[in-house]
Length: 427
Image (cartoon, rainbow, N blue to C red):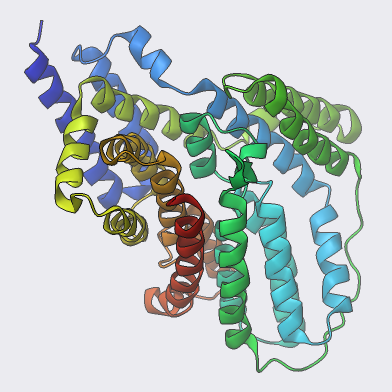
């Protein structure tokens, strides 16, 4: 049997090693997370039971269920059909692109960011071909718009799901929490201000665009499913006030309905549908929960929190600013999911030490970690997917080119959101 100090040191070593490997081997992140989690159990840092309960199964249910519904929604071609209508109604190309970015943002508030990019990308690429322009800036704008709005609701992206699971926030709490405007409004203010950055980038594309309609809606059923899912998630907040099981169960039930519908309506294979899901990210999330669970269990979180609290002393504004902008900087280069998962308990512990409402640090952390990924092409999965799609079309995205768009967009969006959160939650 290991002593408490040995257990603690082992947990910290496995955790730090895993995080360093996430940075240098991003393509192997799932394997690293799973091996790290298994090592913690095999070395006796956690029992199999502790590891099982370290995983937030409600968040896992939300993630997997929403993925299935999003997949079927994408296949229905409804988003692509709506995008075509938007382009035809816009007064010129610049507004076509801006409205497509707004559509990507809207879809992304309810559908995972990568799925959103895959839904909207074909429209952007066909528009670029028609106009004989380079689609790089357009695709970057779509990716960063979807990352931004994915933060706005509980089901928009894994970081929001992590915060919801950790703080026991329901779908409705993302709009109004403890009687005050919540994270949704901070994100929307960031979206409005960063919209001007995108307008500046595309302002010279003045010609009128008309697309020949090619999209045919295969079925409106997936749209009805997605809307029903959102409504039920909002209603579930009233009977599962502790955010412990309902949202995950609802999403899984809707995922099963979506799979069954796909089988009977489109003669799709249920096995193939299940196989094609993003199991990599699912396993990665489970591994991260266990890794973070181990350092929480062994008391490392309190030590980190004590160190950071000592740095900022009684200055709450300094602490809040540090949390937001360190999160922005780090998540530009490392995956925001493990970073956020590790920092959530630290933020709460620091809030308790300073005697303030933890929502201030938690919301600041979510904004910094989610939006910081927009700075670089490797900062978020949606960016990697967008760059991959461009590469397939023969366009190589330079790191510096991405940063030229991503950095001003992020700084403007983060600053606006950061100030609003401070204004509402610092009292």
